Image (cartoon, one colour):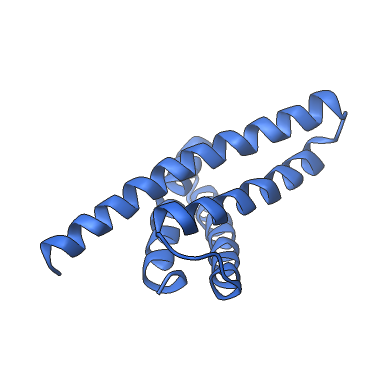
Length: 128
């Protein structure tokens, strides 16, 4: 890997992290607004917020983090990686629970595992 490749990888990673923080805040904001102003039940509000955050995440990550074009192929791959991340998050949380760990440690494990997992897959598969 050349110095240029390393620099580009670091730049993508930083942009991916910034985008992740932004869409997490967006998810929370949409859920709170739906619960407080539309009187939506929390599961429905979070489901709608997840969809909004995923669409925004795809657009920003595609155009900014990975400097790619919006395209059906990358959308399909992005959604598959997102689904895989969801399943892995459930598995990590379950494993933490089965190990008898405090639920907060499970959350930390998910927060450390899923972004790395999705970044690697997006970098080497979704946007290749």
